[in-house]
Image (cartoon, rainbow, N blue to C red):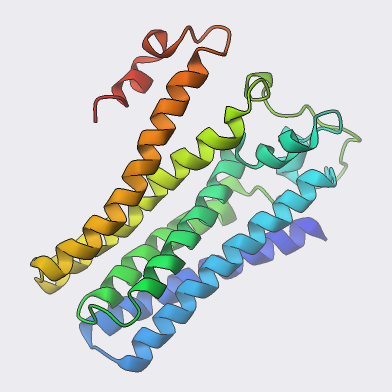
Length: 252
């Protein structure tokens, strides 16, 4: 039942994100009050469905439902409850699912805050945001499939990587990182909308700047926390002895 509920939520999220993107672009090309209203509704629906899918996965992790493929991959009855909770973002498939949750939250907030502002380009912006949401929903429905069914589930699982259980920063660092990465979707959508409409003045810069500052702050926090965490894990050797790709993150 849990795998079916999760897959249904993901497929519905893919459907509403795709429809919302199309309606948003059509409304941008031919402005319509009704079209913008439906774009907003579909944006909120996408956020709600992503939240539902994540809640279903958290329930599966906490109840150790090893019929769910992702739980079978990272779940374990022997780990503390907090580890079961954060296992949502301890591996690739769950990280993409959590990415969808953060994206849905950003889209819902940005759509709500601008529901009565900038009517010339907000439908285009929402169309771009929901196109990004449709892409990640497709990944979840296709290649990733965290809710795939395990036909003969084991009684226990391996749990997440031991290096991810040794520090409480596992609770804070990845959400900050995703809040930074995913948050860049909002200024990206606003920039695309401004280019599509040719509106590059202050009315475009103001909302873009506000939604750029928030993910930039989260990214800064994530880089600092990641560098701190590197000193706590055997083999990482601290921030400057870390992987060159990680060191490069400090340059911005």
